[in-house]
Length: 309
Image (cartoon, rainbow, N blue to C red):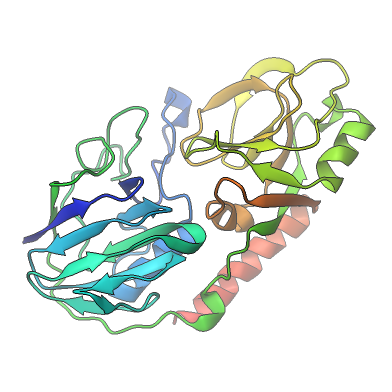
C-alpha cells in the first residue's frame, strides 16, 4: 500500500464518489461527485469499479506527489496537466512511479476535474460512501477539503490497465449551455408570465454558487401566491424559486427538504453537464416530458455500455 501527498490542493479539492444514498430520510445529504459521468469515466480508465472515490478539483486543479507506482486517469474539465513537467493527456490511463509529481493547473473549459487512482483510496466508508460532505465535516479524508501536506493511502490494484476513453464520450464544455428540465412539483404556483420568463430567458450562474446549489441571476420568476410551501423532499437538480424570484438549482450537497416552490427539475441525463458549470456561465432551459427525460437517460446508458464494452 502506498500514498499520495497533496502539494497544493488548488481552489477546492475533496474526495468524492457517487454519493451517500439511502439516508436522506434521516436528513443526510447525498453529496458525491458533481459530474458523475467524469467520475465513472476516470474510474473506467484505471479499471476501478465505476463509483469508486476520486479526487474532485474545482477550477484550479490540485498538485500532488506519488509515493508509489500506480495507474491514474484525469477526466472532466479540460486542463493542461503535467507529470514531472511533461504534458499528461486526459481521458486515458497513465502510468506513474514513486516520486512522480502531477500538476493539474487551471481548467480551460468546464469546472471540475476528476483524478482516479487504480485500486482507489484506502479511506473508510461512512454510510456506504467515501464522499466528503464539507458542510457536515465528515466522510472523505478527515471530513474536510484537501490541504497541502495531506497524505492519503491508496490501495494496490494488482494490475496495469491501458485504456483510452472513446472520443464520443468526451464532452465539449461551453460557457453557454442549454439544460433540459421537467415541470416541477409546484409549477402551478407560478404565473404564466413567470413560467415564460423561466423558459425564455438566459440565466447566469452567480458567484454565490457552490456544491450545495447554483444561484442564478436573470429574469425574475413571478409566483401566483407566494413562494412558501410546507417543507418537502428535494432531489438533485430541483429548481427552487424563493420569494425574490431568482431560481436556485439544488446540487450534490443540497439539503434533504426545503420550503420553497419548485418550478422544475433538471433531467438526470443533464446533471453531469450542469455540474461542470461555473460562475459566469450562461444557462437556458428547455422543457421535456417525463417520458422523454426517461428515454434520454436510457439511450445515454445504452450508448455508454456499447462504447465501454
